[in-house]
Length: 410
Image (tube, rainbow, N blue to C red; front, side, top):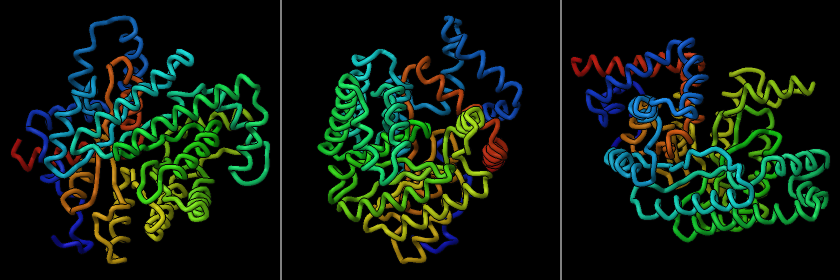
């Protein structure tokens, strides 16, 4: 297969939607057309969670529409058919247990830890699931992370030094609680290491991110020896993350481990800006989209320049960023299926990117959430809001789907 730059195009809808039947494609067209009405989305995202909690009989409607578009199933076992179908087109899967952070104290956090390990054990039995994702806030009290982060922010110096000194500010009870968090993280990463499954640690809000970063780097130092088990998620819509990526690389060189870096643009922009405004501090978010794009592409280039020490996941719906990564590999004479380069998009979105990358022999996956409908409602509402608010997103998805419908004569 040719690996010239012209061999990768995101305009080929035959490749993009080959895995969808005519009925599935028409359903997707209806859904994205509906999400184009911002007023409808605003009402729906407010009313739907309440209707689910109140027991209204809307479950089957949700399951047949937005749930089936963006979620792999309610159980691990239900994801198997989706993963199998994606695998037929050389697309892999990142499994995500789509339940938001636990609220049942230590018992709930221990349960979440066991669930993450169960996902790892299941993934290891499947031929097409090399990764799974976790949220540290799923097994750690948010306010404890917040206290640690605030303590670290008040201390100067490198990340690890600030972390060590911040630990001294915890009470004996909090120290014991944090040690339990660390044990859970280690249990998850050890299970993944033993079963050769990659663990992608999700990014969190800026006011809890420092302890998450520290814990993730410590896990990389322990498990990323010779191969990559643990990946940190780096949000390039933050003004400081390109520098953090480079600092993490230096730590990897000094401590002799492989840096796992999943590159995303970001997920908490409105919340971050609102909090910064309320506190009267500078926003941690880039001033505009162009600045985010610049840092994101610079991060992609930095990672590809250092593939001997960095394993990266280009997790993006931006067509230019994906083509940029492909072009960088080609310019360096590197294979598009390089073991340290992976591409990923959310299930239900940007099929034109995913399946055309797979056709060009790139390693690519779909991020596949699963979980009971009532538990994944927050995720689904974010997808609806994102497709409604992100400039051009719904129009692009809808245009490609309609192009393929015309191609099929439908």
